[in-house]
Image 1 (cartoon, helix red, strand yellow):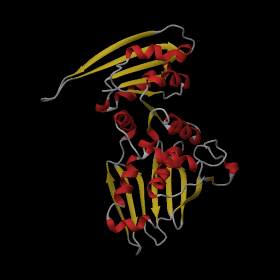
Image 2 (image 1 turned 90 degrees about the horizontal axis):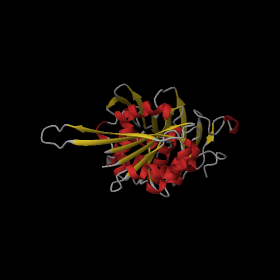
Image 3 (image 1 turned 45 degrees about the horizontal axis):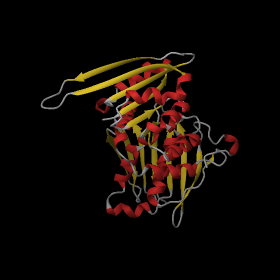
Image 4 (image 1 turned 90 degrees about the vertical axis):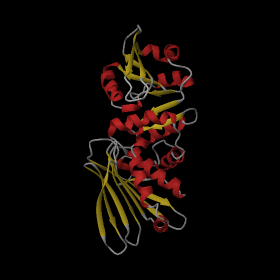
Length: 327
C-alpha cells in the first residue's frame, strides 16, 4: 500500500520503467511516473490499471500506474500536479534517479520517504551529506546502504557465536573493496562497523596524498578508526567490478585471525584464517539480490524503519576526506 512517485528524464523513461518491472512482488500499489522533457510547455497524462489473478486462495492485486509527460518549467509546481493523483491515505515515496532537485523541493511536503542512491553521485561526500539533510525532514532509503546488507549480515553472523565476541575487541584491520563509483557503499559499511562497535571515526586520506583527489571515483582511501584501547586501520580500494556495490570485505586481528568475503558466482566466497594459520574456504550461497532485487528491497523499505542507517551515515560522513565539503 504505497504511492511511488518517480521523476525521470523522458529519454530514460523506458529504462526506469523496465527497472520498476523487475522489483517482483514489491510493486507499489500506485506508481506516478513523471517524465521531464526539456522545452516542453504542455502536460499530457494517461492512467493504466492492471489486475493480477490470485493464486490459490489468495487475493487479487490491482496496480495503478499514472504516466505524466511534462516540461522542466512545471517542476517548481509539481506538487499541484502530483497531489491530486496520489492516494492521500497511504504513504508516498519519492524517487528522482536523475537529480531534479527542484522537483524534490516541490514534493517534499507530501513525501513520507525518499528513495535515493548515494552511489549514483560523482562525489560520495556530497551524496552522503544530502542524505543526512533529507533525513531531517523525511525517512531516507539509500540503495547504497541496501547494497551492503548481505555483507553486514554475514559479518554479524560471523561474530554471533559467544566464543568469537572477544575477537571484535581485537580487530585491527577493516578492508573494503568496491566498484569504482561505489565509494559511498564502502564508507557506509565502515560507518556501520564504527557505530555498532563504538569506534570513533576520523577523516580518511587519499592514498598518494591530497593531489590524488579525495572524491575522485575509484580512489584509494586510508585511515584509522579509534577503538577504546587501539586503532583500527581502514582501507577502501576500488576494483574493476561492473555492477555497483562492494566487491569484497576483509576483517583481521593482529594475532593472525582473519575473514575475507569476496563476490563470486552464485554468492560470496568466504576465506577464514585461524590463529594457528589454518585456512578454510567455503561458498555463501544467495548473498546478492542483484540490482533488480536492490530496487525492490528499496521499495519495501518504505514501509519499514532501519535504526542503524542514521548512525552509520553519521560515521560515514566523518570518514569523508578533509576538504570535500561533507562536514
